[in-house]
Length: 237
Image (cartoon, rainbow, N blue to C red; front, side):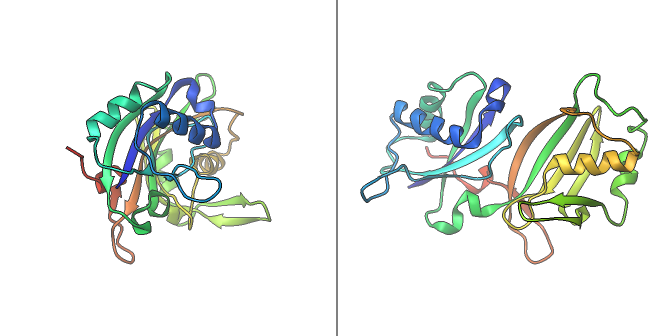
């Protein structure tokens, strides 16, 4: 049986990198006595996979990993309670859902989009007016070009098609971005392009970023139908 675990990562835990988070959950699963399955061979390992690595310094209330269990003896509530009993401050298991078996349902391959909220640290807001329709004007452009750097090269890229939604919510910038293996857009790049539109440069460490949710796309061709990874599973009674 395969299950999907949704968890949050807040507070000081935001400084823990992805590989250490993987090791953290491996230990938590052992402590919680969850009947996780192991691979075969000379070096068996837990059969689990994470949806989308979270950058260091970014908080989240919508992180996911899948794991394979050897039996169905535990309910969703029992697994949630057992895992939360092992969690450190800043980490919390939100839900456990059963998902279909097979590679097609793996969270890593399903990731298509994510919601983010971005706020400015106190004293590091833009030095120019940016709340009076500026964000709307920025998003209304036909194209939004940035210098995108990769390990091999850097080139001018139009990121507008990868920004699905962008709006001001109070003092926060909320955005829904393309994610996954094909087009993976970081919120930092969107804010960098917005700063360029305003004619300024962001101060170092000016942004606080929170990932709210991660989605799969159940639509066809050019019509997106985003569904949270949690909604693709069923509660185990």
